[in-house]
Length: 385
Image 1 (cartoon, one colour):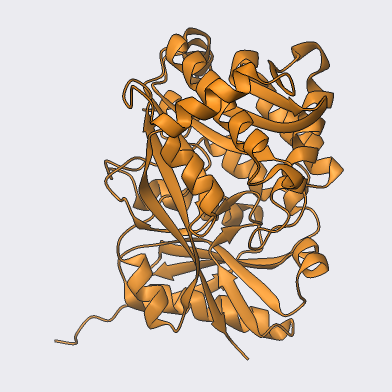
Image 2: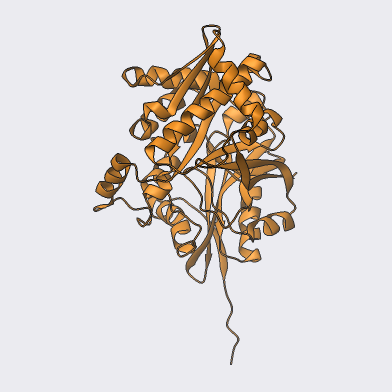
């Protein structure tokens, strides 16, 4: 009797049908994993669509699918980002959307395909995983597999890191996710309380909530602060105007004004903080699908605020106030105000993410908020030419 053989093929995604398979793959291979919270499929589809997502508009990219014995078993994207080229270098290509079954052969073949494509573009360095930029989802989960992924944070399996490292990749940088138990950590550490007290007594420091009647302009103000605050971070490039408008549109249905704070120092806007409900939790049981009736359930859950998990995905303090007493005091005050508003709304936990491991200032702020690091995400790099 002839022994059976398996056939592994890596194909370039070219058609709408193949794109749908690319999008569907994580829902197939992760289904049943207790720590995986499926994101909404429509959001994933729009993230990939350059007509819907400005961050995908100017990319040079190629999607790949791995197929074994007629079944989709892995995927990867390879891409060039002109915004990164403008602010950093023209030597780097990226990989992202990396998902696969537990098969070293499959994962190696996917990475090889992405690298080969990047070389044809004249690139000599590969970095990833990232989903279009550091302003969206980045990093491979390398620690904290037992805890569910929150909204716009990636999921991963323990076998990914060994396979990527076996393929010649090494750590570029680690990013941390901190978790705060909103009903614990009291009384606050002495230094935290001192900073909040200082902010409350200082005539130079003020804060307010978002004005919903001026929503788009408020988001633009926040992103102006964000672009300045994070401008010296690893891999950063600023949000362009069209991306800011897109962000405002996407965030408007889920932002509560009393959980979006602005702070000023000496009469000038200096800081902001945005706390959002975890949409992944609100969409639990949907398998990522809104039709035919899940959209009504989601609206109900949003209205009734049934989520217990929140996330702070966006915050920032203007650089000139970094490591200053007023800046740190203002940040501490905004954290305490947002946490209190979240508690009143019924949230029990809040993730602060992501934070570069060497960003001592932000790490200290998270710790002073009685948050603890509970997940680690890693960006990898490799010379490919």
